[in-house]
Image (cartoon, rainbow, N blue to C red):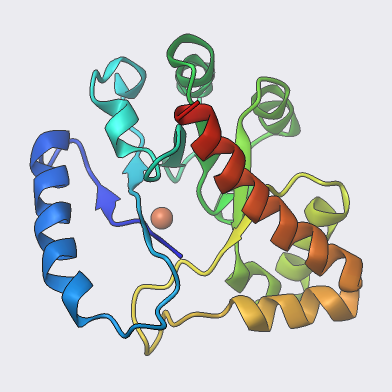
Amino acid sequence: MVATPHFYAQKESPERFLARRREAWDRLAPALPADTPRLYLGAEVCYYAGVSQTESLPELCIEGSNLLLLEMPFQKWTGRVTGEVIQIVQERGMRVLLAHIDRYLAFQSPDTWERLAANGVLFQVNASAFLGGWSSRRRVCKLLREGEIAALGSDCHNMKNRKPNLSDAFAVIQKKIGQEAVCMMTERADHLLTSERSAANP
Ligand SMILES: [Fe+2]
């Protein structure tokens, strides 16, 4: 499990965010049951102009890795915005995983996705996209078949209306695409974290 609290640069500095996250973790860790899966500390970094130049950006990556989970603006992205995302990969040597791209599919051009993918930007999709309406399901199943999804996420926020739902999504994937697709996504997620950790800590 990866814990990804939101980071908003307009609200606080990375240092303040990291200190708050550490305080929260220090309170939570002793209360976790012994059989809790390993929990990695991360962040969902909300895009801002200048993000690629932020000195402490590596510290916002998923613990032990150089993988940055980036939440993009909810509007059509300009060439400057996508260019800055690519700069994080090319100039900072980090890997970028765009959060819940299922929310942006309707208002980005195919060229935008192609440019990002061609430059090594990775895409994450929320499990809920496989559990929504017919058109949402069809779109993300197509992406999965085309190998464009690097990771599925629950985007869990609580145990009521944003509770863990990965197993529900995997049931849909198994039914619509097959068990191989379930295995592929599981392996891909494992590999993503493993390879990123070893890349960051050679
Ligand atoms: Fe988000």
